[in-house]
Image (cartoon, rainbow, N blue to C red; front, side, top):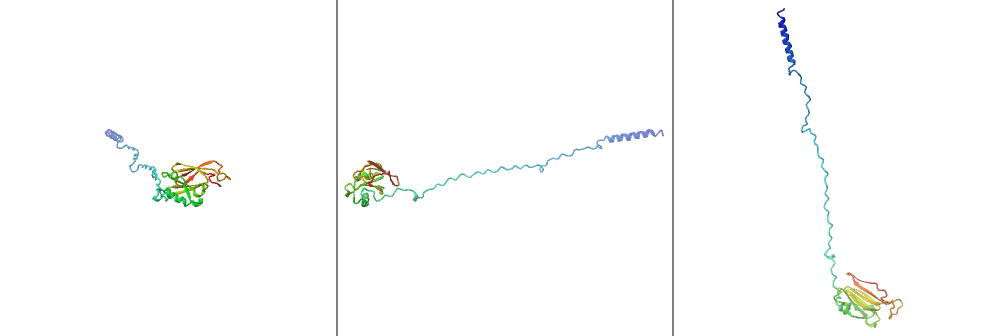
Length: 209
C-alpha cells in the first residue's frame, strides 16, 4: 500500500493540472458577440422625390388691335367739279332762280365777288325791274356747285375776309319800318364754307317783315 500512494497522488495531480489547463483554454470560453448592426442597403434607403415647382404660365403676347382701313370707296375725295365753275355759267344758274325776285337779275360787281382764286365764289344780284327796291340776293358757289343763297332787303356793303368767307353789311329793319328807312342801324353777317356746307352768323333784321 505504501508503494502505490505516491503514484496515485501523481496521477491525481496530473489530472487536476489537465482540468485547470482545459478551463483556461480560450477555445472553451464562449464569446458573446453583439447583434449585427443592420446596414442600409441601397435598395432599402428612403428615396426623397422632389415635388416639381408649379409651372409658370406665361400669358400670350398682347395682340395689337386690328387696324381698320377704309375701302377705296369710303375715302373722302375732292368734290366733283360742278357745272357752274365760271361767272357766266353761275349767272345762268342765278337767272333760273329769278322768279323768286319777280324778274330777271342784274349782277353787281361779279368780277370782284367771284374771286376765281378763292374757295367760296359769290354773285351779287338785284332784280332788274325793281328800281333798287327789290333787295339784294347773294348766290354762293364752291367748286362749281351752288351751296346756298340769301336775300337782304337792303345791303349796303360787302367784303371778302379770306378765301372761304364773304361778309355782307346790311341795314337792320325793325318791325314797322318803311322799306326806305331801316331804323336799326347796320349789321354785318359773315358767310363761311366749313368744308362741307355754307354756314353764317345770325342776321336779325336783314329782311323787311
